[in-house]
Image (cartoon, rainbow, N blue to C red; front, side, top):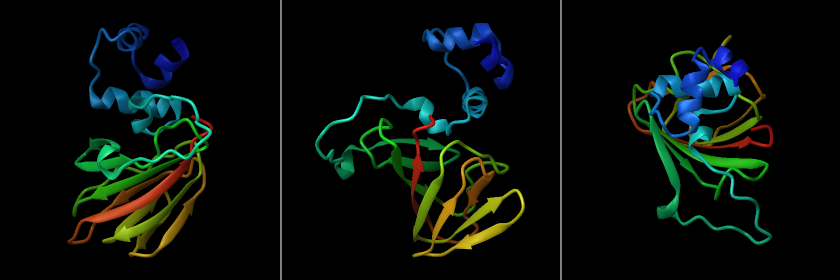
Length: 163
């Protein structure tokens, strides 16, 4: 707990209060904790239920989701218990996933469904158009930016066994 507190730049007391539902941390505090744990922010909002031996269907209207900086993330897999977690990310014009590129555990693959998105790494920027796909190595700092004039939808999966 002490090591996590130091990495996240929060107090051990604050972590304990969050863990015991005695404090409601700010989004910024949650971002710091997620970065210290080297997991995507959305991982802090999910629970692991275990795996089933049968296919698990997630109806379109029953997906878990959350908003961050005006960007909607939908979990398209039932949970985060498997080796892969899938998501839809909706980014409106002018929005971006982070102020600067960040890395995370787990290799990411993605497919641009509609609109265009800029994939910004620490060394270059790439423009994805509908139908383009990408593989992002584990821990490569990156973020997404919609510099276009229409909403963008990006489908992606992250290998989550390291979470």
